Each structure stands twice: as structure tokens, then as C-alpha cells.
Amino acid sequence: MCHAWHMSTNHGAPRAAEGPVVLVVEDEQAIALAVSRRLTAEGMRVHAVADGQAGVDAANRLRPDLVILDVMLPGIDGLEVCRRIQAERPVPVLMLTARDDETDMLVGLGVGADDYMTKPFSMRELVARSKAILRRAERAREAAAQESAAATDLAPIEVGDVLIDRAQRRVSRAGKDAHLTPTEFDLLVALASSPKTVLTRERLLAEVWDWVDASGTRTVDSHVKALRRKLGADLIRTVHGVGYAFEPPSSE
Image (cartoon, rainbow, N blue to C red):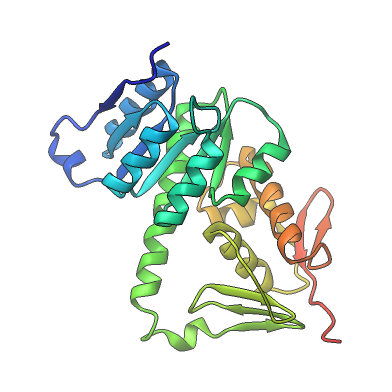
């Protein structure tokens, strides 16, 4: 299969001309075309490319609002594409993987992806997740713009040896910085804002992902595992069959 194709499905419709820019990096042309057409119908300006290097180049050129990125790509794979894109300019990334492998998912989240979906997936779910990611990104931009005016609302959260600086979106434990993705940070804030309170997966999906379909609860689980890996396994308690609770660490 030739991997040199690329396309844009912004056909000049007035609605799409003002919509968010979405870059699709997918070497299966049928999938890329279907995704592009559906997102364009939702008012987005979609550009699609078929290999990793083209994805990196397009991300730098287009400065998209969202990247939908396949893990298995010719040339540079999706994980390396994500690393390179995030190093140049942080951007929300939704990763697509053909394998329902939790290790792959954790690696994807570790290189800066906001969410992932396994193939095959429904277009309805893809649209829902894409819109939720874009809404979160817009809220983050608005919060940053209002940071100085709302400083009192963004007071740091300090629990034990964990310091969460919401204004600067930085986290440290025992004085050591932890590098979290935007979604990991939002998840930590949601949990730490109600210490020792059990939050259901569905509630976390609604608050952090702005997405309420229960089929996405594994996304919550994978992000919690990523947080534990970065901050320590003792901070977040699993309540089996229900959800998670933030456990304040000892200050000693």
C-alpha cells in the first residue's frame, strides 16, 4: 500500500471554516477517510496524512487543536510521533491502537497522549471523545487566560508531601517534580480535591473527560495506573467495583 497519500476534508463549508483543526495520522486509508468525513460533518477542519514523518511535519505546520494518531504507522511509529509533536508544542492527542493491550496504552499515555481507543471503534464514540478532549482544552485555555483574576480559585493543593500548583499546573512529591500530561493533572486535581472520598469511574469520566459513556471506564483505570507510576502507588486507593479515592500521604 502506498503511504504517501494525504487529504483535507475541509471543503470550504462556512461552518467548518471556523471549526477546530484536527490532524488525523492513519495509514489505513479507509479508516482515515471515514474519520475525516465524520469529523468534518461535525464542523471540524480535518487534515489526514498516512505516515509518521508526515504527521510530525503536518502538526508543526498546521498547529492543530487535536491529533488523532494511530500507533502502528510506517516509518516513525505513533509513540515517537507523539513524543516529537509534544516536544515541539503540547497538543491534545487521541491515540488509536489495534491491540487492546494495557501496556501499549500506558506507554501511549506516558508519551503525552490524552486518551486512546482500540480498533475497531464506533464513529459515535470517536466523535464524543474528540469533542470532550476539545472542550477540556478550551477550558484549560480559558482558565490560563483568567489565571491572575482567579488566583484565589486556583490556590495550591498541599496534602502531605504532595504539592499541586493549579495555577502553574505543576505537581511535586517530596520536592521532586512529576511530569504529568494535562489529563493526568486534571484527574489528580479531581481526586485530591476530595481526599479520602471515593469517586466513581463514571463521575471521574464526567468531571475530567467531560464524557459520560461507561464504556470509557478503562480509560480512567489506565490513567490512574499512570499516576501511580509517576507519583507512587500509595496515593490512590482502588475501591473495587466502585472507583478510586485519594489517600493523603504521611507528611513524615
